[in-house]
Length: 308
Image (cartoon, rainbow, N blue to C red; front, side, top):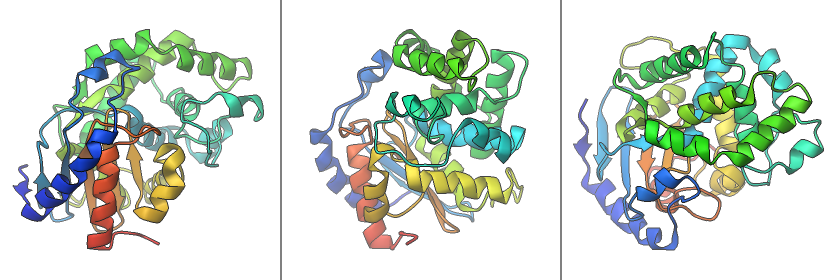
């Protein structure tokens, strides 16, 4: 699938790029420091299979926290809502995505699936007899969502994350103490870091965004990849928690279901209209792509995207 270049999008990207000088590439994961802070690209994927783009949309992005939405969908299909929400809650948090504070006041049950503690608890629920089998199921699910059989993970980024995941280890042990997590912590961390290191391009990201926008159905093939209620649950969490502790402001300024990752990726789903994939590695203080946020603000205003 090829995208056609859009002059209008090019102008929006050019304007949004002015914000990148105020951001910083994530450096707490050493492998992510190699990204150029000035990069910014976007792809928009429509239900009829048409795609428009601006920037280098073929550049690979590791999903990082965007993967949290995808594993949530798979866990819901594996275990059902009752099982998943016995492990994690529904509520947004004003704390940073990697905070441990709320675990001390909620009997170690994470507030929602989009913070690190919640995502770890969700990944714990993915079925399979080994880390390899569970990772294989996650990757196959994501390949189906994106319509791209070549999707895999970056071993370099996964190893870099695994070696520096001290805070995530702490979150796991905290939850293990109260029975939220019941497996070996190192096994879970291996799976989680490889999940976060799954990589794709903006076009793949936009197509996955479209699947959620169309309530779980691949409008290109006509296949229902996930149940409607699963897609809607995931979109709800994207609205309330998807942009870390900037989700409320994002809902006001942009107003679409979206999920960001510290690699600089953003996946957006405009219900019944299109999917959006963005890559801009320069991050703001909350861990969101600073150029990507500005681009979405301008797109929302110009194309009337807000669902509110």
